[in-house]
Image 1 (cartoon, rainbow, N blue to C red):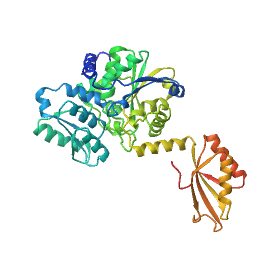
Image 2 (cartoon, helix red, strand yellow):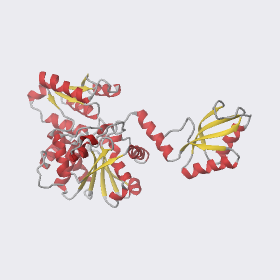
Image 3 (cartoon, rainbow, N blue to C red):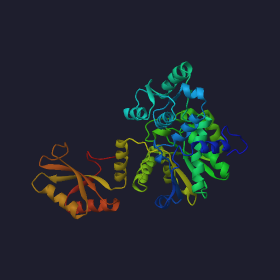
Image 4 (cartoon, helix red, strand yellow):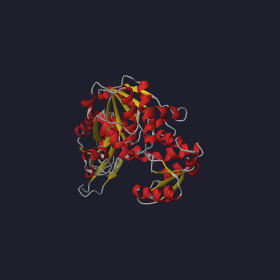
Length: 415
């Protein structure tokens, strides 16, 4: 951290934002997690920004920007470019304040996000195949011709200051925190929180977390944008190719280190938050925990604050993540078993699995596999077990009964 540099957003800006937001956004809970602390070896505190009305921290920055507008700017309305949480935050608070909002989204935006934004009062314009094309239209048509005010998702001092209020609340709830682990997309969240945290506790360590495919802050600091490879990620909220110009300077001055996390760690973090904390976190909201799971030694013994920055995850994606988690933990096991194609053999297999304490949740009886003898059949089973040891016990018991068992080769394999 370069303490001599003067950031474009000050600690006083964040404190003023807190006064503006008071009573208009939820002061979300910040609680210690005993189980996650045991799993990671750190003392883990969670800030539940997924409890906001739109299930995202984005409301804070959007509202702080909206409240800064002049009467003339309010009358002209605001414009935003987003396919996610920022769109809903702008639409919700603009409508609440009586300000017209127009949100530009790419034409391939899922209809659920379009509908949600419209239901919150925003006018949605679908334009372009990418956010870059949407932004070009917004700048030319809405700002240039209609005179609307841009509410940028991250590269705006008012937005950054609004996001920083999260750190004020966290350190009020848990003043003993010595580390904050914060997601990085465009950089607004970590920028504001780092300034706020260091205004209260200069020695506090701020760690930024990016998805492995979108290390936009790391790439900018290294001067090599080719490091951002892109690709699929469940952390769509931080899948940003270009970090903000304002926010990268704050990161350069205020953030101690950057980490990159892989998809498997993000999936596991989403699953743990659902199963242990009983909360729904989107991928971007789980990357802080993913960082602790990826490198527990780095945080061992430290008092770490994590921000669950959003909970907007597609229900089918969440279901897939949770099922895959069961597979990784050997609580769901796919087995292929060769049997004679005669009456009673399926019942014998089912009986043996039941005697071993397993539960068959899906079965497929296949006679037409190319490698199967004409007098035999192949059973593909999806079995519920307690853990890896129990799964191995079930397999061993089936083999002891004379069955040939292959694991994870059937059509019901999950990973």
